[in-house]
View 1 (cartoon, one colour):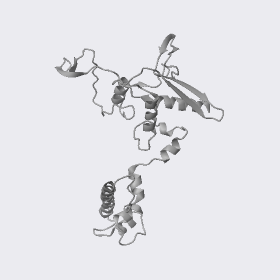
View 2 (view 1 turned 180 degrees about the vertical axis):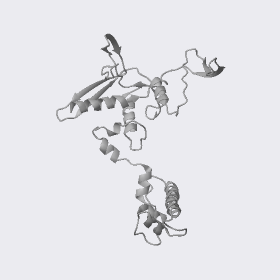
View 3 (view 1 turned 60 degrees about the vertical axis):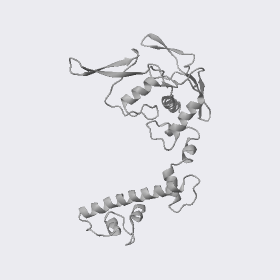
View 4 (view 1 turned 180 degrees about the horizontal axis):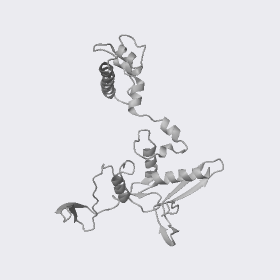
Length: 266
């Protein structure tokens, strides 16, 4: 049990990144030409302290929530700070505000961060994580960083529509299951309401009409691919009904006048 708790704590620390943008001076990279090895060189213009990071693998997702390539993650790590840093052994630094001294390979290092973390393991098996933020920490635009920003990060990572790489939603956080089951995508809500729905308190009538028009177009295209496949493989001939093709595709029992939507919903 304790091992599992430590794993959960590590996961939480890994994903709870406060988007604290560094105050980097603006500068641009100028192409200088080819060096003696044939490689193109660049030089930063403007501030001489500007850093140039070049890569062919950028996806331009420089966000702690959505970075999905190593170069994107590198940039994210440069311009953001983690809520809880780790030491050279990968262990969480719990007292980042005051700083912690830890030894590595015979040398002592001091680790500082923007928050303290207190972990309390309760007798009933639950674990409390109490976070204290450092005063005076600001975003690059001068806005103060508060625990509300940490809560916002949790909302993003826990949202049912979140499609980034973090998996905080899979950890056994109290209330997580209820939160995720109580929220659904607009796609699922409109689909469940049906085409004849007249309650437009959560979406507009125009949104509903557009949804069903696009949905039917997608269904028709999907079913046509199956029909074409059956004809191409000699299972059916041109002009056969959707029901006949569906039967040869493993969906028997459709009415002779079945539509593409009937087949799709079978």
